[in-house]
Length: 92
Length: 225
Image 1 (cartoon, rainbow over the protein chains, first blue to last red):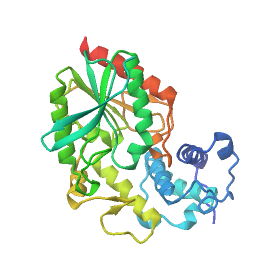
Image 2 (cartoon, rainbow over the protein chains, first blue to last red; image 1 turned 120 degrees about the vertical axis):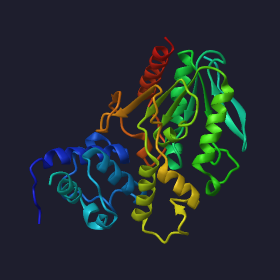
Image 3 (tube, chains in turn red, green; image 1 turned 45 degrees about the horizontal axis):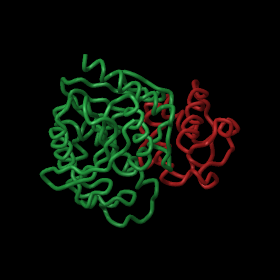
């Protein structure tokens, strides 16, 4: 179920910027990401070490804390899933 | 521009390599790279900053601290305490007005040294560094070689304890903190740039290096006046 929090578009912009910065992707490329764009397992740049960097950078920029047990394949599966996860932590 | 020179320095625990840039007189900068993988990701960038500083007429040294770079001290035996001692003793030996500059966890080493000022890019506490190292282990979810293996770095229990308590300088001396615009934490100056230390491959940012070298040289000039 997809829940849209108010302020999600700001979180979405931040997630795009983080993916671009950490994975070295062009702004153009991340601008093409949609909710269904697959991430972990599909982007070769997103290996497990890069996952750690992406999540920590999101924590720093959004002022959130991500627990170890929240890190799973689901929240990293698609761009939409990652945005939703980040929004759920940042906007409550 | 005075070319790069390879040199060594002695501290009470041994001898380590260092790079020298710029003139041998006037104020001198000690540059500190972050620990572990971030050092590889930012070394070329830091050297670019130091070359640019040399163009500004400011000399610098980039030491290997024990347990880093070419040091024969293995990572598993490295300790923040020793790294701080080596840094402090090097600063003493330089005998000129000495300024410390650092990137990320490089800010953990200059805390005890007698410096005319400290300039930090995105300083990181030991605790935050540990959190990131731990997260790397969780994210990889592979069978760890041992309890002391962190992304291929073997860290001793002493080192982990050292890092837990280590924080950047918080004294009354001159401190200038620079952060990236994407970082919401306090800073004296912010620059719009991506965090090189988080990329998976080593990289460089020539424009940012020039901006930071300008910033450092203006800051040193204001400290000296």
